[in-house]
Image (tube, rainbow, N blue to C red):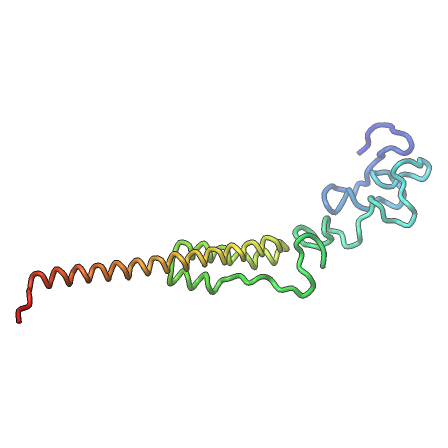
Length: 180
């Protein structure tokens, strides 16, 4: 693809194998100096001439794959925002307490806790370390809410039973008075 007659040092013609995206046209220019955004032909001399040692903006590292070196969603090892250190384990997914509070305390809040806890390992595996830690904290929050709501419900049910039996005993004793 050309953009008219631009003479020496212009954008020139892109290589036919180029293609856009992460792997093709932005990467390494042909060794013949065929133009492009990075390397300029030796006769032109211009703004974009690359040093002979390689490097610069025009060449991709040999690992390829776009940002991060290995493809979409992968972080460079040991670096980046929120990336784990070497040998760091994923956060606790809180699945066991989420299941227990779902069964014994409060079903709706427990279901939310189970969903959040299942997201922890998924996010960790795709490289979303901050998201995994946030999902673990949310799972912990939801199972604690379920536990508190279940405890309050159990206490209220016990109080209701006590009141019911006291009223029942009072009504039964008033119908059948005891005489000595």
